[in-house]
Length: 479
Image (cartoon, one colour):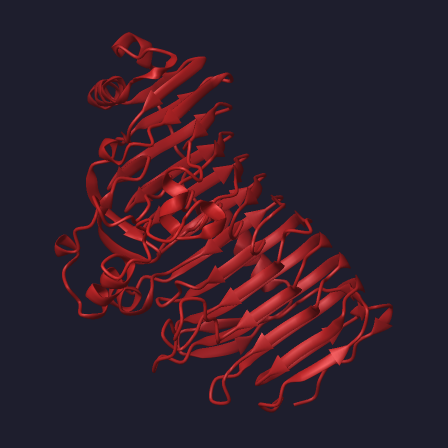
């Protein structure tokens, strides 16, 4: 095993591919053939159930909607959705035009469809978002409704080439983040005030029932944009989402989700593009993410709340996506306490001087979690700022983040990866002596330019197979 001394190997060029052939069976890990994980991916894709809707159409204009961008159409959306659901389902049509609304709550068997030149403008008045059971940064609570929300629904969709515009900026939702870059100044209330986010985290640590974790007015915890909570069989297709208050696409405790052809363009604080949390059997394909935070961030709850819920996120596939700006292309964590496994990323392009990392896993000893079986192949990376692959058990962004829940990271594979500029490191991996980062494989990886080949601390079994960094072949490290 690589010792707890930090190893930094200097160089100036980067191309990386990680391939690892290990699967976890119950409590033991067994080695499998190279092709097996990707065969499993095909089975996952085939097994995801698909939405199916009646051909009936319910035009929101027939329920009183006015496309002037000023009239509040919340009631028109509610009436159209209710009528559609009560009559066996179908399509709720948002025709061309600009429609202002508060929260939209979807029902089973309803496809909310945006015409090509339709734009839904969401109110920036918090009073237009009723208190519902939701989540904030991996902790459940009663808070402002997500802008679009569905709870305990089946066979539900948002489709069409129109725009969902959260209208968030430095004068409204974003200022609540407490970030100076987003309009906050000393004396202005924010989520960082002691009675707000810290109180929520403390409530979860004390196992206070979610129904008693009531926030909302005066607590400055921003709502998610699109949240499917405890839903099954969901489609999000072709829409464009801009100017989000907070996390953007958030499947929570949901199963069988397809996100296809979606464009996310939102650079606000915590503007993650897609955050599957406690969710399983997710296919994210043909999407573009240009974000103020992680492009895709796979979650499974924060600290005590994640351990209480104890639902791992698993069977998540990312295909043919483009990642532009963001903290990471495909990220796992940091709200990761229930664990993540079986993640497949293939045929993606990541490129921006404002993209920090390509693939990242982040956790710490407060979060804990078992993160395993992450397979990446056929990746084209132009420029990333920091590194191509970062696996970190010491993630620390909110002050002290240490506890007694030592995480596990194992079985991570990059294969057929081409990188032009990898930033500071091709691989940055840090584990604990008692829980090293284990089983990393880079196979057929080429990194043309990078400052240092790797930074490694407590890493066990890292393999470089046919991998060239800064025009030199990299040898595997013997334990």
